[in-house]
Length: 241
Image (tube, rainbow, N blue to C red; front, side, top):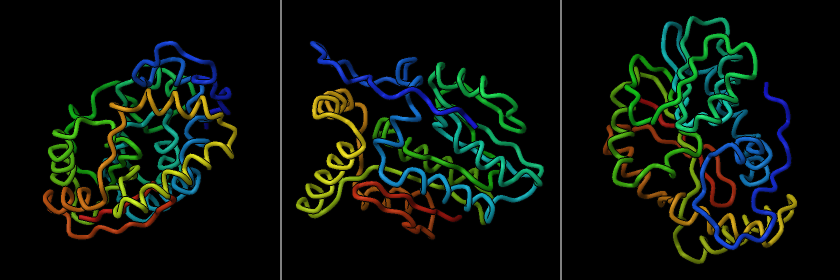
């Protein structure tokens, strides 16, 4: 497993020009700290994905971790499926993220790939993970990505879709955003850091409503969709083919 990363100070100093958020070397260096201090329930979410792997992954099948970042999900899945003959394909379009993954030592059956996840053809899959990934994909390309995943999953295979969402009614959305901001402050982020990161993510992280996710999954042909996790405005769906 990766060592604890450096403390996230990416947005700690006032910036005259806040640039669009990128998964560059600066972010990669502190990503583990950033994600655990920014996403409520993240550690539990990882444990749940590992549990799903132990239940749903089948021998001689493929597992895809799309938007793998530092590869935590892939490594947990590898641990849960070590007695099976499976291939884990872990994909991220950030060269610094994939480079870091490859430095962590023995990856076993994990195939690290630096690529756009939309270039990956899903086949013979018993599990596909989109863990806080889809919201960074252009909205007009999300349906085709989900449809391709549905096509490449075997019967009984699962898609794990974790996302930050827009909630309805608007009052609930406002309250959950308020609580999420409070969570980040409780985890040590300053008002300046929260504000500057929000600006950086403005046109990069584009959440959908829960209704849109349900519609997209239904259109792709999925009928079993379960919301197994929610914390404030973060949810995770277990989707079974």
